[in-house]
Amino acid sequence: MSRVSQRTFSKVAEFALAFLNERYPEAMTCREIAEELARDNEFVARVLFFLKEKGLAMQVTASPRGRDYVRWTKWTLTPSTKAKFESLG
Image 1 (cartoon, one colour):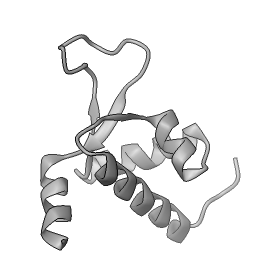
Image 2: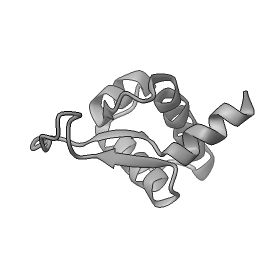
Image 3: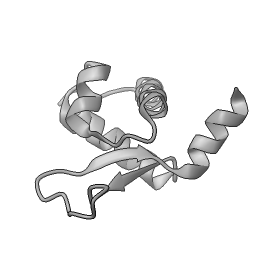
């Protein structure tokens, strides 16, 4: 895998947050996010785990009906991140 600069990584993270904000409260799979950002799944997964560590995104492991996702995890914004987006206008 080629190396990505910190600047590029940050831009992709910003785009991922913007996409999750646009689709909130719907949880999105890594594949759906990767398609939107025109990046590969592994790179987007790395970005999403980075955002999770920062407390900006969270993994959704169960459907709204309470059934656990077995094959994948979905991602969405944390409520505090969504509130920050709303306060920005």
